[in-house]
Image (cartoon, rainbow, N blue to C red; front, side, top):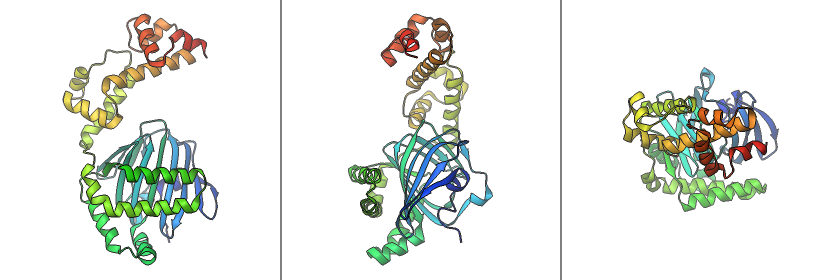
Length: 323
């Protein structure tokens, strides 16, 4: 019989078991996908906590029929601590989450595509099969099963995945869990995880009013295409009006959706990307600073040097000398 871990596309296709004890399993991401780990703690029978800390190389697409569906209805609550993720299911339902946000899912469908935009992604996830969790919580804590099924109903009644900015109580509990994991305080971690799930059950309906509002998948796909265009054309003059015209998207939606997906403005993203490209070329090539300036979209080395020093607090020449 398949269990929650044998159902996982991530754990079975993208990672390998590297360590385990009575309390936890650690899976290491395979090199072709990136680097990092998923450490899974057994909180109580049927209820798990995962600490995820990894760098993903590329967009992940789940085309494996074996991992298209879970064997039972699954509950998953992901508390993002670092990074940003964009995910779709096969029906095009969207999830965009980043630091300080919590995403919710219940159902039998595995995610179809997942893309991480920042170098590192770190999160704490509560999950398990909903029937198993409901049974054990009713038996041990006298929490009625109906509370869990009502929770699932609230999660699934929205068009897109629900993502909510964490409140002070959730922030405190998540931080205490992370501290417990760091200090190997297994019993404290278990207690805080149970407390956090009970808090979610009791407060989700009210907290849901703070949910993020998404743009459509087609609009988000355009924004992803725009970001790739920016990265591949840093030497060109890039304006919002030009991007709006080229990708057939209004200026207002472009600005707002870009900020939702990448947590910064278009112009700030262009400048940051140019600075990162310049830094890379200074450290890893013998190109003249004048040539690097042109590659990064600046007309001359003076304007490039001024922008570079404003960003990194040292000049391009000093950066090159530092190795």
